Image (cartoon, rainbow, N blue to C red):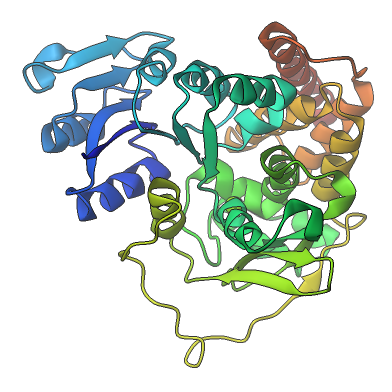
Length: 381
Ligand code: MG
C-alpha cells in the first residue's frame, strides 16, 4: 500500500523540496493534497503535475485552472481544513505562527506529522503536547538540526542523555562586531553561506533568532530543559547537531547541507532509503570548525533561554515580536540590530501568565506584535 501524504505550504522552499523527494519515490507515496496561500502559477503547476485530490488555497481560486475532479478548499482556514483530512503523513511546511492552527487540526487524526515549522511548536507548548498524547499522533522533525538530534537520540535512552548540542552556522555575520552589524544591508542578510532557504528563515539565521527558536523547539520535541540544550557555532553546516551521553560519548549527525535528506527521513522513518542528496566526502571536503556560542554575546540566544525558563507565554512573545520585527525590517522600517532590540523590549514589557487555550496563545502573540509596531515607531524618532 502506498502512503498518502498531504503537504501544507507546497509552494515554499521546503514544500517544493518535499515534492522532489516524493517524485523520487512515486512507488511509495501518493500525494493526496497540497496547500498554499496564493492561487499562484506554482500551485497550479503542482496540481497539474500531481493531480492531488485536494488543493487548499487561502485566496479564492479559479476551479478552471485546476485539473477536473480536484476538490478546491478556499478561504482563511483552508490549510486547517486540509490538515483535518486523514492521511499517513502530513508535511507541515507553512512558515510562521500561522502553522499552529493547522497543526492542532491535524493532531486528532493520530497520524505522522513531519514538521518543518518551528513557530507552531514554540508557541503551542503544552497545548500541542497534551493533544499529541491524547490522540497518539507522532511528530517527526524536518528542520535539519532537529532531525539530527532525532537521529542521534536513536542511540540511547533519554535518561542516558547529558545534553543536546545544536549547531548553528552563525549566519553570514558571526565574525562581525556589533558596530559593523548596524550597517548590514538586506542583500548581505539574504546571502547565507551554506543554506538556500526562504527569506524569513534566512534573516532569522543572520540574527540567530532561528537558533533561539530551535532551542525552544528542541525542548518541546524531545522534552529537555533549557540547561540541557547547548549551542555550538559550526560555519560549515556539515555536523547538523549532536547528542552528548552521560558517559561523555558524543553522537553526531553529518551530511551535506541538503534539506531533501531530513525531509525524506521524516517520511520514511524508521527506514532509510536511497536519497537524491550527494554523499558526504569528508576527505575532499572541509575543515570542520566549532566555536562557543556565548549567549551573552548573542542576544537572540540569551532571550530564548530566558523565555524557555520563564514560560508563561514568553516563548510566544519571543516568536511574535521577532516575526513582527522581521516584517518591519523587510519593509525597510527598522534596521538589522533593531530586531533584537524590539524582541528584548517586548519581553521586558510582557507579564507572563498561563497559556491554556489557543485564545491565550493568540492574545500573547498579538500583544507582542502590537508592542513591536509601536516600539518601532518610537525608536525611529
Ligand atoms: Mg534549522
